Image 1 (tube, rainbow over the protein chains, first blue to last red):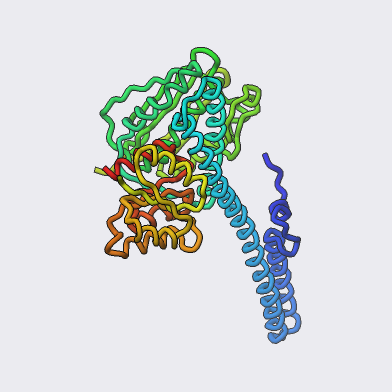
Image 2: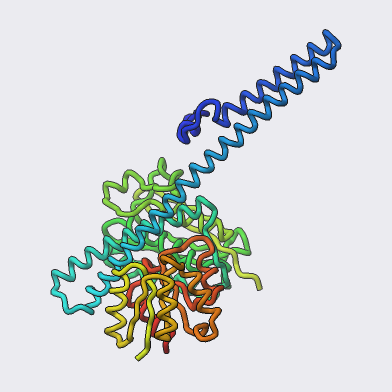
Length: 314
Length: 121
């Protein structure tokens, strides 16, 4: 549990005691109570309504001033947050330009459009390619996290066939999984109704869950089972389950799994790469699609992640 | 030979696209800003325009507006090729009449080539 420190947020945003909403609200409350008691006693002792009115007016003016200060401090906090998001957005967009020239130049070289390559050259161009793609992924992840934070992630939902999408993703990811000694099991039943969501965003979610299952697999005999079925708890939803038999998530870390930059400590030993933003983004997307996401996990046994999506109307 | 105009302020990106398109037998023209881009459209009458959105002098949205407002140029397909992906940008560009919207960092050169071929078919 995080310790409750009512000034901590204000210190973080560089606000002094007299600017901090937390303290200002306390002061306001105290003034109101004192003023009420005071006017009561003055009222019954002197029977002078003018004095009471004067006190009430003065207190009201003081409260107005404090209120004004409060509004200002909230504006400053909002401004600080906005600047952070803007900064991330500008830096990410700026990084994309040089990354694009890198990517495209590499595409030219690796596509042998500038001449044949020997195997060593191919090997090292692949290394650069891998690095470039990872940087692009990080930049995209940061942009998406920012959009989710700002509630500006744009969804373009439509009716689509989820089973076909999963089949396509499975086909694309199987070579990478196989290279890591992991097999992906999925059977398209071709029976389920369409879902209503943004297929590009849902693709990101599913890819992410499979990526994680591959990354955190055991060294031998890894298997990922993908199941798509009608949700037993809610007839209007489809449920997608990604089950692995990997290293699992230790119980003490399970609460933070959907947080930003989460990567279990046990995972660092395994030298797993990644930003730790994937599940935060996945959760954001699933919630914006009107679904739920959760998981169960046991260390050394495996993890099961599932999420739901609404079935398309008609 | 089909003509393609690429309006892009980053010379390195122009070079890479130019290389591929030349190899594929297209003739390619480049403009470094929006104003130059519009001039080249009038002069060369390209079959396809690749348009960045963040451009000096006149940004891509304005260029797109001008292209679609002109009877002579309104039917030229425009592929938005940009790294801008802010709120509403995609919708705005498509509403203004862009054929498709590609984020540079997310597309391989060969995928872009495929899109170009598809549109020019």
